[in-house]
Length: 51
Image 1: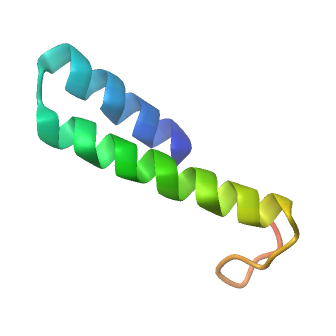
Image 2 (image 1 turned 135 degrees about the horizontal axis):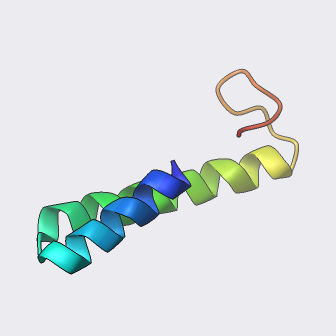
């Protein structure tokens, strides 16, 4: 999810599409939150680790 967010951020910046930029930021933030929760040992979506 983090990688997809970064790709959308780059595409939104290069092509000037603000919707891609916004979706990229949202995916990046959600992916980072899930990654941090998984790294702290909290079960995310029924899994101990979030990849």
